[in-house]
Image (cartoon, rainbow, N blue to C red):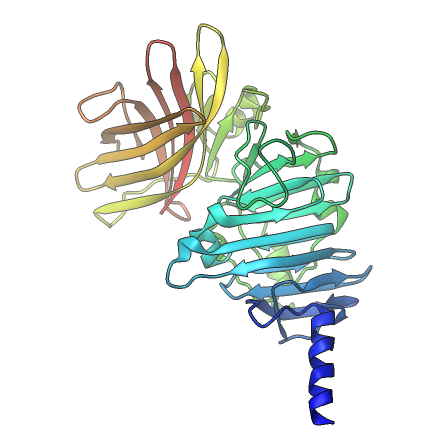
Length: 417
C-alpha cells in the first residue's frame, strides 16, 4: 500500500507540472492574493516551484515570485505564464539560460543577478514577440493579437517572429527590424501586432501594460534608471505606502537616443521638447544626448572609475546613398581618471558584415563634460559626453567615426558605475 501511495503521489506531481527530477528551482512565492495558481494548485506564500510549472491568476489574482538569483516576477490579474527554463550556472554565470513564456495578461520582470550576467541567454516569449533584456525592469501585456512592452529600468530589445527570430530561439533576436526601448526614453512603449516583425513605437499611456492591469500599491518600487538590483524585492508594508505614493519619480538625469527616424526605426523623442527641459550636450544627424533637469556634477572623491555599458544605439551610414545599417556594441569599456581629468573608452562596432574596433581618449572638464575634438593618438573616433552623479554615477556620450571612404559610424551610449 505504501508503495502504491508513493507512485500515486509521483503521478500527481507530474500531472500538476511541477517539473521532473532534473528540473531546476525557479523561485519562491512571496505574495499570493485572490485567484492565484501554480501548476494548477492554489499558490501558497513560501512555496517554491520548478521549471515547467504554469503560473495563472484570475480576475482578482496577483502573484509575486522571487527567483533563485534574486530577481522578481509579478503576475497581475488574468495572466497565464510558464517558465520552461531557469538554469543558473553558479560556476560559469555567463552560461546560465532563461526562458519565460507569457501566454496572456500582464507580467512584470525584474532581472536577477544571473540574468544580468547572461543577458545573451535570456528570452521572454509572447504569442507574437521575442523580448531580450539589457539588464532590466520591464512590464509586458499580451494577447494573441497584440504585445506591448514598457520599461522602468535598463532596456529591452523586441522583435516579432519571422526570418531570423523563432519562438524556439535563445536570447534576444538581433534582427534588422528589431526595436530597443530604454528607461531613458520615458513615456514610450513598443507594440507588436500579427504579421509584422518590426515593433511600433507608441506614446499613448492608455495602451501601456500598467493601464491594462495597474500595479498594486505593494509592488516593489524601482526608480527610473536605477539598477534593478537596487529595487526592494519585498512587498511593501502599508506604513510605507503613503511615503512612496507621495514621492514622484524624478525625470532622468541623462536623455539620449534617436531624434530622427533611421533604418525603419522611428525617433525616440522630440528634440525641441527635450531641449526645453534639459541641456543639449551632443548632436549628430540622427542621435542626441542631453543633460536632464535632475543632472548635476561634483568632483568625486575616488581617483578613478570604471563604467558598465547599460545601453547603446548605433548605425553605419553610407552618406552618398543615405542607406543606414543598425549596429550593436560588444566588449565596451569606459574608464575615468579624475585625478588627471582624462577618459578612455573602447568597443567593437558590429553589423551583420562588420566588426571593427573603435577607441577614444581625451579630457574631462570641471563641469563633468568630456570628449576629444578630433581623432588623436590612441583614438579613431570622436566622443562628446557628460557625467552625472546627483544620485548615482552615470555617463553618456555620442560618438562618430569614418570607417572607410564610403561608411560613417555614429551612435550614442549610456553607462553606469
